[in-house]
Image (cartoon, rainbow over all chains, first blue to last red; front, side, top):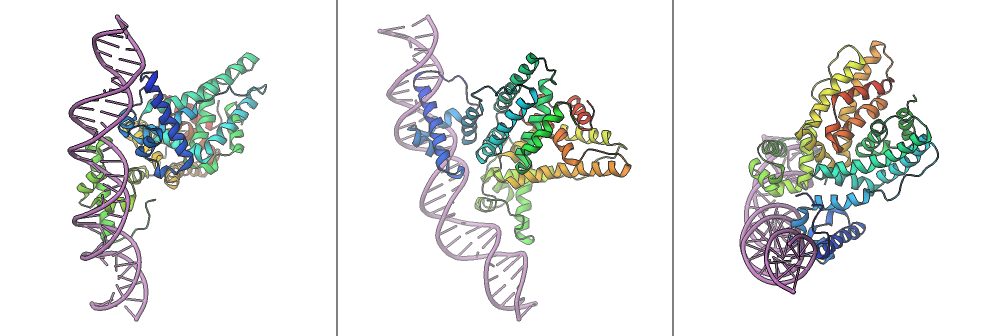
Length: 185
Length: 185
DNA sequence: GGATAAAAGCAAATATTTTGCGTTTAGGAC
DNA sequence: GTCCTAAACGCAAAATATTTGCTTTTATCC
């Protein structure tokens, strides 16, 4: 059961969604993932468990749903005046976020979710940020590689290393990725 | 509870492990992931559910454990006579395997597992294959980029695209990744 | 404002996971 | 080979979690 984007947008449904999301975030801060269960979340949210089951289906999907919110970037990437430094600056922040314990946890939650559209959404968020940086570079008169190339050679290795071997996801490597993506050696 | 590598290696323990793994593989072929539960697996394996709970902890970890076996490459990568074509040939096969529905499912299962060492092991398998290809190239007198560079710019984007947007993980893109990794434009 | 159907609540029915305890058995010591 | 010890397993009861049928509430559309 994919979380429907369009439950009724107003009134009680919205309140329940809000309450459940809040409950999850609070509980995530307090307990380990191990003892985070739907009945516990329901109790905290002041909602009956069956409501959660019917709406989100299972814990994985609920957590992935909440997690996706956190991935949504709330600010535009910083403008440092040049493509390379924009990418580095944004990338370092992204890397930091992703290698942190909660960040890795979040990634795994998204990955574990059966729903592919959710993973795609997560991909989209990063792509939009990169697209903004790209667009700015074009406006400045730089001639950057296209957005997909940047994704492939910067975000690709970054996420890959975070997921599989997070110790090797370092800012030093990021510099290599950026320089290689921009056509350097 | 990480699956211990060294349960007692002989006798009953080994038989149970074997029976459970077999049961999982059989059931995966018959049913959807939805109705694959530990009691069902236990019944098929002729084992009591509590045995599975005590040994593997939960379904995620059991499936990830079984899945990891499938990731272990059983043959050395084909030798086509040159680095670029070796990478392409191996990469195409790897890509095929990963974008297939069961392949994606497998990746998600590994991701969903709490145990990071399992994810690292999965990374290791691919790295060993690449390392072999690399070594052969060196022996031939080619001067390839180092193994980590190959991982970053070929496997990185490959896995990234498979996970987030599998439609965009195509052999055409693979060619670009290989050529870029080898220093081309 | 009233009709209608989606979403929530409640509680009983199922299914699952956990746990305590007795039994089997692998692996080591002699 | 036999004995000892502790790891694994089996079994069944207890604790939890999930599903489901039915009722009630309430957004949303006319």
